[in-house]
Length: 267
Image (cartoon, rainbow, N blue to C red; front, side, top):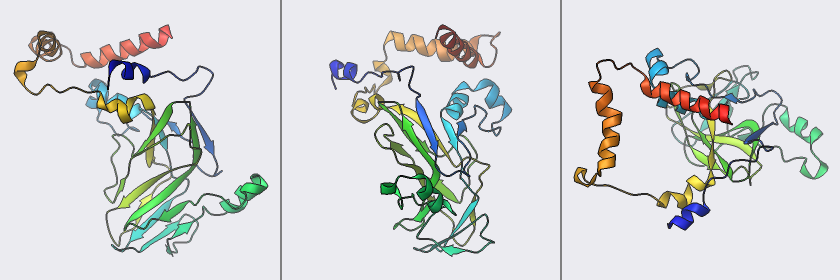
């Protein structure tokens, strides 16, 4: 990629009168998304919260998305998955594709005639063993040029009985259900998703920073190839703080927070 290619792909901020992302709640019962929390919903160790700005920023990057209802799955290890949900009286149902309870009628009541009957499924078992697709009950629209990275919540302790797949949705072009796929990893055990806990996190990414833009990188393969400015930067970052007897913990965190405050104040 040439310098002109990089310039052509430069990130343009969203127009001031256009939200970076708009969430549309389709399922009335679902909890609204909320800004992700720098303390990882209170689960982060105190020392990390005070001094590790890298973890704080990653934790707060994006929005939490919650299951619209308490649901649970059981997997037989092959292609068989069953599920139950709050209000089903603990009855386990074989899962192929299922609507959110009572939502199809609500959708048809609100939708134009030509769209009636097309309410998105809530949960579905995919053809791959142990893979379940879950809809959040939301649709999202991002500003032009922006997409959403859909992933598991950053730095929250996770349930070891399932894994959340990651995906990038070009949600400025695609106005459809905001869903994720999970891979069940334990058999014959109820695996529950709690509507009080986020099951995914969505993060805004500009198209200028993925795809062909990632071809613009450089490798320095030997220590002897570092230039004086790189050694000086390493000294500032690593050596001086560790040889200063008056050094205080969290200097990087303090400097980062001060810089973000200045940027916010200058608009």
